Image (cartoon, rainbow, N blue to C red; front, side, top):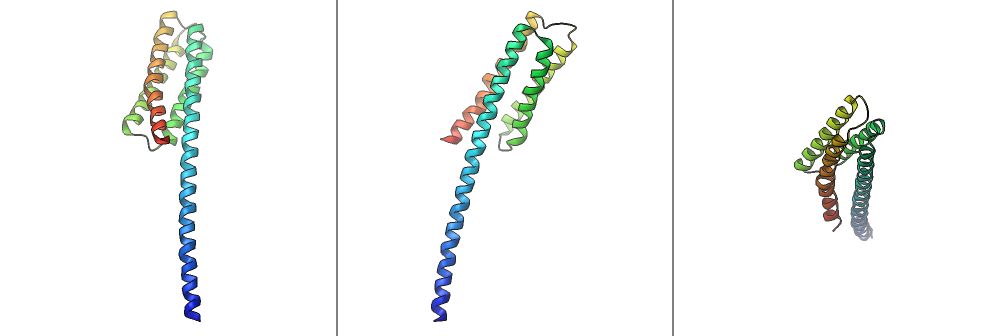
Length: 147
């Protein structure tokens, strides 16, 4: 009788172990989906902030530009820190983008007045490169992971 009970207990433990593994896999899958969704939200927000910054450049508003630079830099740093699975090339591209935006910020900070038209065009060219390079690559990677 006790052998029968022991056999039943072992069978129940094996069943429980399988259910636990399935629950763990489902939780990991949900976590990955949430991570991808948060990344997508970060990228959309960063793209919107860059669009705002380009418009600020067009209006040549120095003070507002300085505020927007800080927002773009914070978003880029958050992406770099919160996504350790990025490839070395992507990490390098994020670092380059951070450097480029920091350089823009320093250049605008050094201006005695408003942003000049020629400078505005050049600043927006750099932001366009970030959008069409880094952001597009990260969005494509996210789309591949969702497939």
